[in-house]
Length: 375
Image (tube, rainbow, N blue to C red; front, top):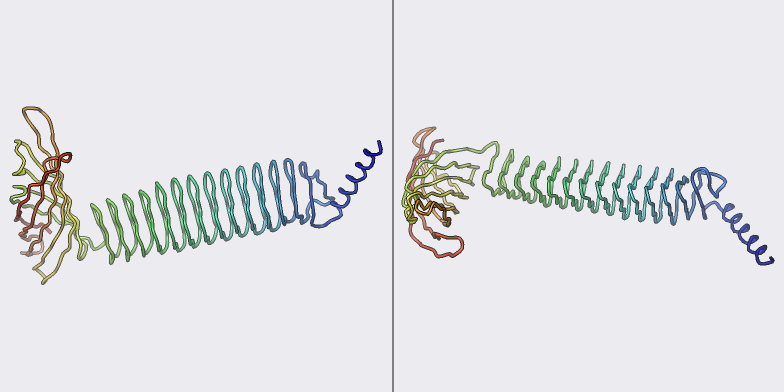
């Protein structure tokens, strides 16, 4: 009996001490059922079952539901549902759904759904769905759907779908879907589709678009308004791009037709050719891709050099079956513009041809080609 009375008195004194402190401890079931007499206090430790609301938190917060703070948070927060700060948040926060700060987020934030900072973020945001920064960001954003910074961002954005930076971006954007930087970009963009303003870095994807390229674009299709860098792709386009048709033939393919995309000093070329002398079947042909450099000797006289890859096909009429091989080519040539729509070219080089991809055995020879250019 005496022990029970002593224990009761100790618990009563502890609760009175806790309630009397301005910045100590708060227990809450659900607002307004709370240990503190006032619902809006700055506390060092806040523990709630379902829902609590205080002015600020300095220290530690634990909730089975939602934690709300009207002012700043400088603490470790663990919440089953979510946490909200009307001011800046500094520290470490883990939430089942969302971590939201109306001002700065600084530290590490992990959420089952989303992390949102409506001012500035410095640190790391990790979310199952998305991360959002209303102004500038500096650090790492990692999510499965999308990361977004409405202002300048410096650091790393990694997502399963899309990264977006509305301001200057300096760092890395990695996504399976798309990377978007609506202003100047410095760094690496790696995705199926990449878009940026002025590019000082590298875009690597299926399709790359930039306003002005002072770096490198590598993709199937590359586009830029003003091109002064390097673009490597099947099709390279800009406002200065010249699309030209080349019709010719030689000892590598008796007849050929190709489309060349010329950007100042560089070009890419896609073509077909048939028949192929080294292939023995009745029906043979090739699909070719070339990338090269173009020189101007004068207004009408030009030179070019390129490297090419050819996919070779032949059809066996007796077996009703296709077989495939490949060829590597290097060549150089001269070109003369007869008038503003017609030109002529001649090229020579060397070829390494294998009739099979599986058992590679090269047949080597000097190659030559002649034809016309339709400008």
